Image 1 (cartoon, rainbow, N blue to C red):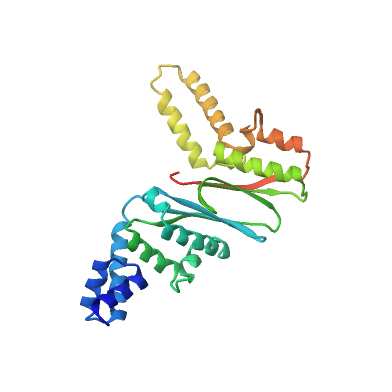
Image 2: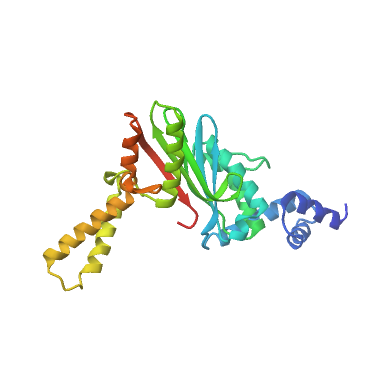
Length: 283
Protein backbone atom coordinates (compact mmCIF):
# COMPACT_ATOMS: atom_id res chain seq x y z
CA UNK A 1 0.00 0.00 0.00
CA UNK A 2 1.42 3.39 -0.99
CA UNK A 3 1.75 6.28 1.46
CA UNK A 4 -1.07 8.14 -0.31
CA UNK A 5 -3.36 5.12 0.06
CA UNK A 6 -2.41 4.86 3.75
CA UNK A 7 -3.16 8.56 4.26
CA UNK A 8 -6.56 8.17 2.59
CA UNK A 9 -7.37 5.15 4.75
CA UNK A 10 -6.22 6.92 7.91
CA UNK A 11 -8.26 10.01 7.09
CA UNK A 12 -11.33 7.86 6.47
CA UNK A 13 -11.00 6.00 9.77
CA UNK A 14 -10.03 8.95 12.00
CA UNK A 15 -11.43 12.05 10.32
CA UNK A 16 -8.08 13.82 10.85
CA UNK A 17 -6.62 16.25 8.30
CA UNK A 18 -4.25 15.32 5.45
CA UNK A 19 -1.16 16.88 7.07
CA UNK A 20 -1.81 15.26 10.45
CA UNK A 21 -2.33 11.84 8.83
CA UNK A 22 0.80 12.21 6.72
CA UNK A 23 2.90 13.19 9.75
CA UNK A 24 1.47 10.35 11.85
CA UNK A 25 2.24 7.72 9.18
CA UNK A 26 5.77 9.05 8.85
CA UNK A 27 6.25 8.98 12.63
CA UNK A 28 4.83 5.44 12.78
CA UNK A 29 7.10 4.27 9.96
CA UNK A 30 4.09 3.31 7.86
CA UNK A 31 2.30 1.30 10.58
CA UNK A 32 -1.38 2.32 10.38
CA UNK A 33 -2.31 1.06 13.86
CA UNK A 34 0.53 3.07 15.40
CA UNK A 35 -0.49 6.06 13.31
CA UNK A 36 -4.04 5.87 14.69
CA UNK A 37 -2.67 5.86 18.25
CA UNK A 38 -0.37 8.81 17.48
CA UNK A 39 -3.30 10.79 16.14
CA UNK A 40 -5.36 9.89 19.17
CA UNK A 41 -2.67 11.15 21.57
CA UNK A 42 -2.29 14.34 19.53
CA UNK A 43 -6.06 14.73 19.51
CA UNK A 44 -6.18 14.52 23.31
CA UNK A 45 -3.45 17.16 23.49
CA UNK A 46 -5.33 19.46 21.09
CA UNK A 47 -8.56 18.92 22.99
CA UNK A 48 -6.91 19.75 26.32
CA UNK A 49 -5.59 23.06 24.95
CA UNK A 50 -9.04 24.02 23.67
CA UNK A 51 -10.80 23.31 26.98
CA UNK A 52 -9.64 26.63 28.49
CA UNK A 53 -11.71 28.60 25.99
CA UNK A 54 -15.33 29.75 26.34
CA UNK A 55 -18.16 27.65 24.93
CA UNK A 56 -21.37 29.67 24.99
CA UNK A 57 -23.06 28.30 21.87
CA UNK A 58 -24.46 24.84 21.18
CA UNK A 59 -27.79 23.04 21.38
CA UNK A 60 -30.17 21.42 23.83
CA UNK A 61 -31.35 17.94 22.83
CA UNK A 62 -34.50 16.17 23.98
CA UNK A 63 -35.30 12.45 23.88
CA UNK A 64 -38.71 11.12 24.85
CA UNK A 65 -40.21 7.64 25.13
CA UNK A 66 -43.10 6.00 27.01
CA UNK A 67 -41.04 5.67 30.22
CA UNK A 68 -39.20 8.98 30.51
CA UNK A 69 -38.09 12.21 28.90
CA UNK A 70 -34.59 13.66 29.05
CA UNK A 71 -32.82 16.86 28.10
CA UNK A 72 -29.10 17.49 27.66
CA UNK A 73 -27.16 20.63 26.84
CA UNK A 74 -24.03 20.39 24.68
CA UNK A 75 -21.94 23.53 24.31
CA UNK A 76 -19.48 24.66 21.66
CA UNK A 77 -17.79 27.97 20.82
CA UNK A 78 -19.66 29.11 17.69
CA UNK A 79 -23.12 28.82 16.20
CA UNK A 80 -21.47 27.60 12.98
CA UNK A 81 -20.26 24.44 14.75
CA UNK A 82 -23.66 24.04 16.46
CA UNK A 83 -25.06 23.46 12.96
CA UNK A 84 -22.20 21.18 11.84
CA UNK A 85 -23.39 17.72 10.72
CA UNK A 86 -20.75 15.88 12.79
CA UNK A 87 -21.66 17.87 15.89
CA UNK A 88 -25.40 17.32 15.34
CA UNK A 89 -24.97 13.57 14.81
CA UNK A 90 -22.90 13.32 18.01
CA UNK A 91 -25.45 15.26 20.07
CA UNK A 92 -28.44 13.29 18.76
CA UNK A 93 -26.82 9.98 19.70
CA UNK A 94 -25.69 11.46 23.01
CA UNK A 95 -29.27 12.52 23.76
CA UNK A 96 -30.50 8.93 23.40
CA UNK A 97 -27.67 7.75 25.66
CA UNK A 98 -28.58 10.42 28.20
CA UNK A 99 -32.16 9.14 28.31
CA UNK A 100 -30.96 5.55 28.68
CA UNK A 101 -28.61 6.52 31.53
CA UNK A 102 -31.12 8.73 33.37
CA UNK A 103 -28.78 11.73 33.10
CA UNK A 104 -25.98 10.06 35.10
CA UNK A 105 -22.98 11.89 33.60
CA UNK A 106 -20.30 9.44 34.77
CA UNK A 107 -22.29 6.55 33.30
CA UNK A 108 -22.88 8.49 30.07
CA UNK A 109 -19.16 9.15 29.52
CA UNK A 110 -18.34 5.44 29.66
CA UNK A 111 -21.11 4.33 27.24
CA UNK A 112 -20.07 2.88 23.87
CA UNK A 113 -21.31 4.82 20.85
CA UNK A 114 -22.01 3.54 17.33
CA UNK A 115 -18.35 4.12 16.39
CA UNK A 116 -17.28 1.54 19.04
CA UNK A 117 -15.69 4.26 21.18
CA UNK A 118 -16.86 5.63 24.51
CA UNK A 119 -18.65 8.96 24.70
CA UNK A 120 -15.56 10.46 26.34
CA UNK A 121 -13.26 9.18 23.58
CA UNK A 122 -15.64 10.38 20.90
CA UNK A 123 -15.82 13.79 22.54
CA UNK A 124 -12.03 14.10 22.44
CA UNK A 125 -11.98 13.04 18.79
CA UNK A 126 -14.68 15.48 17.73
CA UNK A 127 -12.95 18.38 19.55
CA UNK A 128 -9.71 17.58 17.71
CA UNK A 129 -11.52 17.25 14.38
CA UNK A 130 -13.79 20.30 14.59
CA UNK A 131 -11.28 22.52 16.36
CA UNK A 132 -13.51 23.95 19.11
CA UNK A 133 -14.11 23.39 22.78
CA UNK A 134 -17.15 21.12 23.22
CA UNK A 135 -18.60 20.33 26.63
CA UNK A 136 -21.56 18.47 28.09
CA UNK A 137 -23.57 20.93 30.18
CA UNK A 138 -26.82 20.61 32.12
CA UNK A 139 -28.87 17.43 31.89
CA UNK A 140 -32.01 16.03 33.50
CA UNK A 141 -34.39 13.09 33.19
CA UNK A 142 -38.09 13.08 34.11
CA UNK A 143 -39.91 9.81 34.79
CA UNK A 144 -43.32 9.29 33.18
CA UNK A 145 -44.44 6.75 35.80
CA UNK A 146 -46.47 8.94 38.20
CA UNK A 147 -46.54 12.22 36.29
CA UNK A 148 -47.57 13.73 32.98
CA UNK A 149 -44.65 15.46 31.31
CA UNK A 150 -44.83 18.15 28.65
CA UNK A 151 -42.10 19.78 26.61
CA UNK A 152 -41.50 22.72 24.35
CA UNK A 153 -38.60 23.38 21.96
CA UNK A 154 -37.88 26.93 20.78
CA UNK A 155 -35.53 27.92 17.92
CA UNK A 156 -35.19 24.37 16.60
CA UNK A 157 -31.84 23.66 14.92
CA UNK A 158 -32.82 20.21 13.65
CA UNK A 159 -35.29 17.52 14.76
CA UNK A 160 -34.98 17.24 18.57
CA UNK A 161 -32.22 19.87 18.87
CA UNK A 162 -32.96 23.48 19.78
CA UNK A 163 -31.57 26.59 21.43
CA UNK A 164 -34.14 26.47 24.24
CA UNK A 165 -35.89 23.46 25.74
CA UNK A 166 -38.48 23.22 28.51
CA UNK A 167 -39.86 20.17 30.30
CA UNK A 168 -42.57 20.52 32.94
CA UNK A 169 -43.95 17.70 35.04
CA UNK A 170 -47.56 17.73 36.29
CA UNK A 171 -48.77 15.48 39.08
CA UNK A 172 -52.37 14.36 38.61
CA UNK A 173 -54.40 11.22 38.07
CA UNK A 174 -56.59 13.01 35.55
CA UNK A 175 -55.90 12.62 31.84
CA UNK A 176 -57.91 14.89 29.58
CA UNK A 177 -57.67 17.35 26.71
CA UNK A 178 -57.86 20.12 29.31
CA UNK A 179 -54.71 18.83 31.04
CA UNK A 180 -52.91 18.36 27.72
CA UNK A 181 -53.72 21.89 26.61
CA UNK A 182 -52.63 23.37 29.95
CA UNK A 183 -49.38 21.35 30.01
CA UNK A 184 -48.38 22.53 26.55
CA UNK A 185 -49.26 26.14 27.36
CA UNK A 186 -47.41 25.96 30.69
CA UNK A 187 -44.21 24.74 29.01
CA UNK A 188 -44.45 27.68 26.59
CA UNK A 189 -45.09 30.04 29.52
CA UNK A 190 -41.93 28.77 31.26
CA UNK A 191 -39.93 29.31 28.07
CA UNK A 192 -41.09 32.93 27.88
CA UNK A 193 -41.12 33.88 31.59
CA UNK A 194 -38.04 32.02 32.87
CA UNK A 195 -39.09 31.28 36.47
CA UNK A 196 -36.39 30.09 38.89
CA UNK A 197 -38.69 28.04 41.15
CA UNK A 198 -42.24 26.71 41.35
CA UNK A 199 -43.20 28.83 44.35
CA UNK A 200 -41.66 31.57 46.52
CA UNK A 201 -40.54 29.07 49.17
CA UNK A 202 -38.51 27.24 46.55
CA UNK A 203 -36.27 30.19 45.63
CA UNK A 204 -32.67 29.47 46.60
CA UNK A 205 -31.54 31.49 49.65
CA UNK A 206 -28.25 32.41 47.95
CA UNK A 207 -30.17 33.96 45.04
CA UNK A 208 -32.29 36.01 47.47
CA UNK A 209 -29.22 37.12 49.42
CA UNK A 210 -27.55 38.25 46.20
CA UNK A 211 -30.67 40.17 45.14
CA UNK A 212 -30.91 41.82 48.58
CA UNK A 213 -27.28 42.91 48.25
CA UNK A 214 -27.95 44.40 44.80
CA UNK A 215 -30.99 46.29 46.11
CA UNK A 216 -28.96 47.60 49.06
CA UNK A 217 -26.17 48.82 46.76
CA UNK A 218 -28.78 50.55 44.61
CA UNK A 219 -30.39 52.38 47.55
CA UNK A 220 -27.51 53.11 49.93
CA UNK A 221 -26.56 56.41 48.26
CA UNK A 222 -30.13 57.60 47.72
CA UNK A 223 -30.09 59.92 50.71
CA UNK A 224 -33.38 58.50 52.00
CA UNK A 225 -33.89 57.65 55.71
CA UNK A 226 -33.09 54.10 56.76
CA UNK A 227 -36.75 53.37 57.53
CA UNK A 228 -37.76 54.35 53.99
CA UNK A 229 -34.88 52.38 52.47
CA UNK A 230 -36.00 49.31 54.44
CA UNK A 231 -39.58 49.58 53.11
CA UNK A 232 -38.42 50.11 49.52
CA UNK A 233 -36.00 47.19 49.84
CA UNK A 234 -38.72 44.87 51.18
CA UNK A 235 -41.02 45.89 48.33
CA UNK A 236 -38.38 45.21 45.70
CA UNK A 237 -37.51 41.81 47.18
CA UNK A 238 -41.19 40.81 47.36
CA UNK A 239 -41.62 41.86 43.73
CA UNK A 240 -38.55 39.80 42.79
CA UNK A 241 -40.04 36.75 44.51
CA UNK A 242 -43.38 37.18 42.73
CA UNK A 243 -41.81 37.68 39.31
CA UNK A 244 -39.52 34.66 39.58
CA UNK A 245 -41.79 32.02 41.13
CA UNK A 246 -43.83 30.19 38.51
CA UNK A 247 -47.16 30.03 40.37
CA UNK A 248 -47.08 33.78 41.05
CA UNK A 249 -46.14 34.91 37.55
CA UNK A 250 -48.71 36.58 35.27
CA UNK A 251 -50.05 33.91 32.89
CA UNK A 252 -48.51 34.67 29.48
CA UNK A 253 -51.77 33.91 27.64
CA UNK A 254 -53.85 36.07 30.03
CA UNK A 255 -51.53 38.46 31.97
CA UNK A 256 -54.25 39.77 34.32
CA UNK A 257 -54.30 36.33 35.95
CA UNK A 258 -51.49 34.44 37.66
CA UNK A 259 -50.46 30.87 36.89
CA UNK A 260 -51.94 29.71 40.20
CA UNK A 261 -55.28 31.32 39.21
CA UNK A 262 -55.34 29.35 35.95
CA UNK A 263 -54.65 26.11 37.85
CA UNK A 264 -57.48 26.90 40.26
CA UNK A 265 -59.86 27.55 37.35
CA UNK A 266 -59.08 24.12 35.90
CA UNK A 267 -60.83 22.69 38.98
CA UNK A 268 -58.73 19.53 39.17
CA UNK A 269 -58.18 18.94 42.93
CA UNK A 270 -55.04 16.80 42.68
CA UNK A 271 -53.31 18.89 39.98
CA UNK A 272 -49.84 20.05 41.03
CA UNK A 273 -46.77 21.36 39.23
CA UNK A 274 -44.14 18.94 40.48
CA UNK A 275 -40.96 20.14 38.73
CA UNK A 276 -39.62 21.78 35.60
CA UNK A 277 -36.42 22.62 33.80
CA UNK A 278 -35.63 25.34 31.29
CA UNK A 279 -32.31 25.13 29.45
CA UNK A 280 -31.35 27.96 27.14
CA UNK A 281 -28.01 28.09 25.37
CA UNK A 282 -25.91 30.97 26.66
CA UNK A 283 -27.66 31.26 30.03
